[in-house]
Amino acid sequence: MFVRAILSTLAISLAASPAAAQDETPVHKWNVVGFSNPESVYVPEGWDRAVVSSISGEALEKDGDGFLSLLTLDGEIETLRWVEGLNAPKGMRAHDGVLYVADIDEVVSIDLESGEIIGRVTASGAEFLNDVAVAEDGTIYVSDMLRGGVYRIESGEAEFWASGDIFTRANGLLAEPDRLLVLTIRAGAVLSVDYETGDASVLADGLGALDGIEKAREGGYFLSDISGALHHLSDDGAVITFADSREAGIGANDLGYHAATGTILLARYGMNAVSAYGPPEE
Image (cartoon, rainbow, N blue to C red; front, side, top):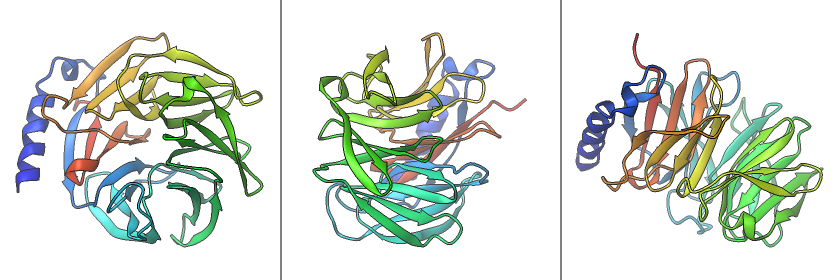
C-alpha cells in the first residue's frame, strides 16, 4: 500500500508539470507493482508487450533467483516468471528471434518464442555487465559499468573492445546503423562510438546519471536518469525533462519503448514497479 501511495502521488505531480502540458511531450499513464528489483524494460520489435528484467536480490550476486517477466502495454503482468534461472539480469536487446540479456559477467541468449535459455557467453574480466545492443550485422555489444567500457561479442566470443576514461561508468547502449551510442553515469554523457575503431566522441553531457536510451519515433532520443528523471534529447542537442521524481526520492532505471503507440516503459528498481508514459490524450 505504501509503494502504491507514493507512485500515485508521483503520477499526480508529473501530470501537472509544465513539461507535460506540451503537445507531444509524454505524460504519465500508469504504474504497476509486483516485480523484484526490476532493472530494465524492453519491447522487442513487432511485439505488443514488454519484457521486464528483475534482479531479485543483489546486483552482483550469483544466486540464480533473477527472472524475466512479460508485461502488457496497458499495465498487466501477463507472466511474472517467464524466464527463470538467471542471476541478476539487467539490459536486454533482441535480434533474429533471440533475446540477449546482460547477467553480471555473461550474456544469456533466450529464444523469444519459447522463453527457453539457449546459450551463454562469458565475458572474461567482466565486473558488472549492464546493457546490451545488437548491430544490424548481429554483432552484440554489452557495457560494463564497473570496468568502464564495452565488450563486443562475435561468433560466440567476447572481447573487451572499447575502454578509457571517457567510458567511466558506461551504462545504456543503442546500436544505430553508423554508430553505437553509449551513456555514462559519472559524466551524464551521450557518446558516439565508431564501430571500426571503438573511438568515442561526446554528443551531450551533464545530463545526470544516465541509464536507458531509446530512439523516439518523432526524432531524438528518450533518456532515463537513475536519480529519477526522464529526458528527451533532440537531434540538435536540446533537452526537455518531462518527468522528474528526484525530489520524491524515486529512481528511474532502464527504459523500453513501443514506437507504434509512443509508449515509454520505465523500470523503477527501488519500488518494484514499472511506470508508463505516452502521448497526451487528444
